[in-house]
Length: 352
Ligand code: NAD
Image 1: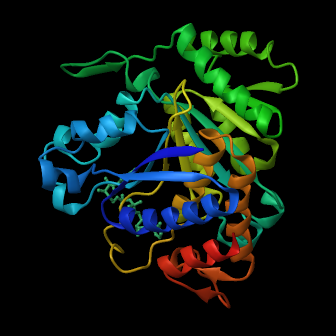
Image 2: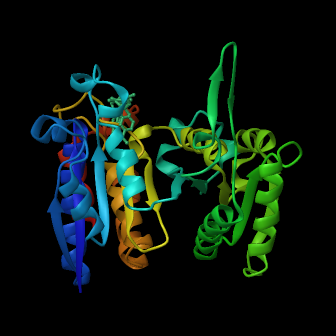
């Protein structure tokens, strides 16, 4: 079967890490007999330079007509002085909106080989830390009414039943594919929008009797993540709480160069990208860690194409390369073998 993938390398290290993910996809395609049709398009700073706008209409059109989207990173100092609505990062918002993506998935997986990179003690993280944070992306306080009134200002947190229902279903579906445990995070002791959130989660839970559900207040969840992170499997939460908790959960794993993400909608089409940005300080120096991007490609195979075995072959290859002691600069430690972006990509490819 043919899979059409829109590829947006973007700016800075985005281009370098995307090149490695493409190589890995080609090897997976050959091994498992899939044809990945990769169409490269521009967004971000490079699109501003070429077309005068961060998200040209043809880029969005190609993405809409693809089975999935892979994105490197956008932005850089060259475009930092532009007004907010013309900056490269606008491309990300435009893509999410244009593609109807409302669920953000951020796995926080700690590889045993990198246990020393975590700020938490080994006895707390133990072995096999693997959390998935599912964050609602298009509602809540970031999108509610807001206003500055002289010396006061307000923002509004609003959620509808329909908005909570659809993100709940994403959370439950993912829990079914993982450890069948879901923690819904809210602030239902104070907020009406959280009480509605909890009500809807309870209702959807009835359709997933195999999933063990619990509710947690966000302040407690923030504490539990550092106290006993292994209690979590899937966390589902609103936009602002998810923004904060996903950063907290991911830092437990050490380096930003290891963190993938996915943004999903109601269809199979998703956008897959590393959590990090374009890293202007190391761009063009073959220093970037390509693993976040490569694992993002694995997520694409799993969530957009239902290729579990193929996704695992990539994840396993990454684990093996780390177990053999290869490290990029960001995850380097004593006695390990330092490699560049390209060599890390090649090692993972060979392992597959
Ligand atoms: P950044 O993530 O680009 O870099 C932060 C630090 O982490 C830097 O020291 C960088 O060298 C390091 N780093 C990041 N990714 C790495 C990797 N793969 N391997 C090794 N080290 C890595 O964040 P920033 O410096 O705040 O932002 C730089 C630019 O990227 C800005 O223009 C920002 O707006 C943009 N940005 C884009 C995205 C995106 O495209 N999704 C996300 C965040 C920031």
